[in-house]
Length: 107
Image 1 (tube, one colour):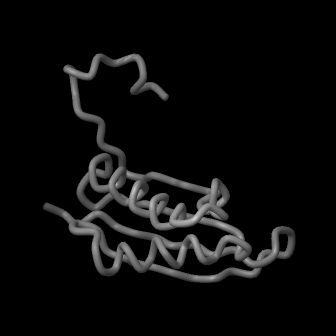
Image 2 (spheres, rainbow, N blue to C red; image 1 turned 90 degrees about the vertical axis):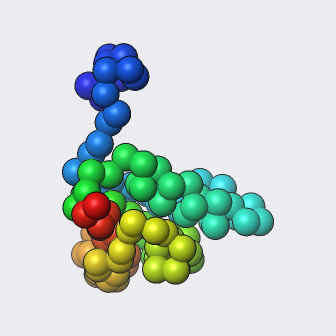
């Protein structure tokens, strides 16, 4: 949020961590929305992550198809990004949660 006050000409923002905690919840029922969401998130990560930075995408297993799409795209199409970790975790409060950790390759 601090970046909002800076003029775009002053610097190009780079982040060490981007967290998307509700991936797959918006418009997932629309045809093709999952692929578009995944492509958009990976495109943003390529532009905004610092070399070695992390993208953490998390969703409940109800939206597991969305994270599967993200993992597939990251594995096969996302230049400059690599999947570091993909795991389903059983949380006592929230049930099954899938976590995908994607790292920006150092330039």
